[in-house]
Image (tube, rainbow, N blue to C red; front, side, top):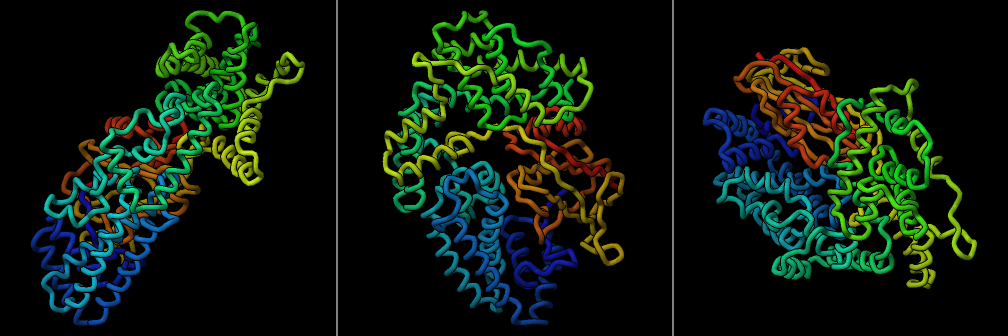
Amino acid sequence: MSMSYEPRQFQDQPPRYSMTADLLIVLGRMGLLGQGSAPEREDLRHGLDAALAADPADLARGGEALGRAVEEALASLCGDESFLLQDGTDEYLLAEALASLDHLVFLEEGLAGREAGKALGEALAELAQRVLAEVTGHAARLIPHNGFRLDMVAMLPAGQLHRFPWYTLWADVPEDALERLAAPESARAHAVGADEDLPADLRMALLQDLSADRPLARELRMRRRIMAGVVRAFAQHKSLGMLRLAREANERFAVPDSVLENGLAAAALGAWTRPPASEGERHERLFLYALCGPFLEARLRLDLFEQVEAFLRDPDAAEQRPGSPLAVLAAWMRGEVADDQLSATAFAVWDARLARAAQAGQGAEVTARQFQDHVRAEAAQPIRKSEAGEPTPSFIARLRQTLATLLPTPALRAATAGLLVAVLAGSALLTMHLSTPTAPMGTLRLLAAGEAGQFRGGAPRIIAQSGETMLSGERFQVRFTLEEPAYAYVFFRDARGRVSTLFSGRAKAGEHVLPSEGESYVLDEETGSERVVLVLAAKEQKKLEDIEVLLHGGEVEAVAERHRGVSVREIAFSHK
C-alpha cells in the first residue's frame, strides 16, 4: 500500500483550496519528495492546463483559500492562547495546522517556473518568509510532539529541510524538555516532576529561545512556582508519589490473560473472599486497590493512599510481614526501595489474585460502580483519633490549611482552590488522572474507489465489515468515528503480515478521514488477506510496538484483552 495526494477523488467533496491549487500542490509534493511516475506527473500537468484554461481565476481563489488556512495555522501554533505545554492539545488540530504550512511549500514548488502563477508565487514567497519568522519564534511549543515531527523529518529530502522549520526546530531534544524545564529541583526528590535534569547547555539554549515567546515563558514560570509551593508544603507526605507511581505502573503492567475485559470488575471485586484479619491486612488491601485496581477515580486513589500512609506512620502499627506489599511500601517510604521493586511486588500479588478470581468465576455481572462502592466500604473504618481526641485531618484538609497560611488573601485563596482542583483532577506536571475508564467506542469503515479513482456505479463503495474483496490498484480511504475524544491508533496489516501505523494520537469526537480529505491509499500488487485495525484507548499507549507485534501475528482480539481501557475494531478484506 502507498499514499498519494489526489485532488478530491471523492465526488461528494469539494476541492480543498481550488481545483488548480490542489493539482499544483500534488505536483509540488511529487517533485519535492520524488513521488509519482513520469506518466502520472504528465497526466496531472495535462489536467492542470485544462483546468487553468477553463477557469483562469480558479488559481487565484485557491491561493487566497490557502492563505487563510495558513493564517489560521499561525494563530493556532503561535498565538497567545495556543498550544502551551501541549498536554491538552488536540493532535488532530495540530496536524491540520502543520498540513496547511506543508501545502504552502508544495504550492510554491508547483508554481516554480510557471508564468501563469507568477504573481501568486511572489505573494506566497512573501507569506512563507512571515511563516518562517513566526514559527522560528515559537518553535519550542512543538517540542512535546518531537516523536511525530522526527517521523516527518525522515520523509523529507535533506536538502529541503530548511523549508519545513515546523518539523526541524528543536526536534532533537527530549519531548518532556519543557516539563523538565518548568519543574523545580525539589520536585524530582518528591516524585512529582521530571525524572532527570536537563543538560546545562540545553537549559540555557531553551531559556534564551523563550525570551522571544513570552506567553510560553509566563506559563512555565507559573507552573514552576506552583510546583515549588506544593513540594515545599508537602515534602513529608508520600501520597502524591504513590499516585504518580500508580499511573506509571498501570501503563506498564497488563491484565492477566485469563481475565476477560468484561470480567475485570468482577475479578477485582472477588480478589479477596474473606474479611481482613487485622488492620495491617486491611491497609495492604487498600494499598493494592489504590495502586493496581481498575475504574477508580484519582480522588479515591489519593484518599486510599493517604489512609495507608497514616497507618504506616503510626508508631503503634504492627510489624509488617517481610516481603509483603505493605512491608515493601514502608521501605519505599523510607527511601530504601526503588519504584520498580514496589510496583512489581504489588502487581505480582494483585495479578495472582485477579487470575484466581477469574478462574473461580463470580456469578452475576459486576459493574465498575459496584467495585468502587466495594472499595469505599472496605476503607470506611472508624476514623483514627489524634491525641486531642479530634479526627486526624485528611491530606486535602492539611493541604488547604497549609496553603491558606502561605497565601492568606482572598484572591490567592481562590487561586489555591483552583490549584487543589488541578492537583486532584489532572494537572500537566502532577499527572493526577488515574482512573481506568470504560474503553472508548467508535466505528470503522472504508470508502473504496476503482483504479485511478473511478467509482463503481458513480459512487464510492462503503465497506463496513470484513469479508469484502478489493483489487490491486484500487484506491480507498479509512474513515473512523468516535463517540467522544480518545486516543486513536489505526494500523494496516498487509498480505505478508507487515504492520504499518496510519494514525497515532489524540482524536476529537466525530468522523476522521485517512490519509486526509484530499488523499487516498492505493493497493499495491501483493495480494492476499489484509486488514485495517482501529484501536481506541482512554489513555495514550506508550508502547505501540507491543500492539504491532500482536497484529503481526494476527492476534487482533488479544490487543483488547492485554491492554486496559482499549477497544478494537477491524475490517479484513481479500486483496486480489
